[in-house]
Length: 88
Image 1: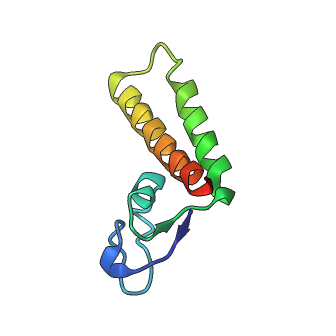
Image 2 (image 1 turned 45 degrees about the vertical axis):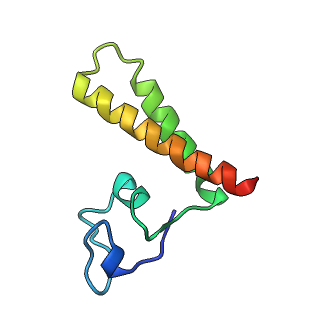
Image 3 (image 1 turned 45 degrees about the horizontal axis):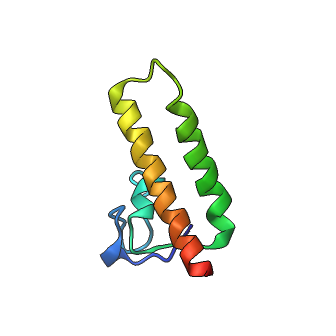
C-alpha cells in the first residue's frame, strides 16, 4: 500500500518529517489511517496470505508462530475483501 503520511495519525509513531522506519511493518501500516491500498497491491497481500497458510502446514510450528500466522492471514483476508468490495 501507500503511506499518505500525517504524523498525528501515524501508527508507526513517526516524526514531523517521516514515518518511523523501525516500527514500520505490514501489520502496523495496514492498521494505520495513513494507509492507502489499491488493486496494484493485491498480489502482495495474496502472496503474504499464501506464505502464512503454507507455514501452517508445518507440523512443528509452535503455538505462538501459529497464532501469528493466523493473525496475518486474517489481516490479508480483510484487506483483500476491502479491495474486492471497492471494485464492486
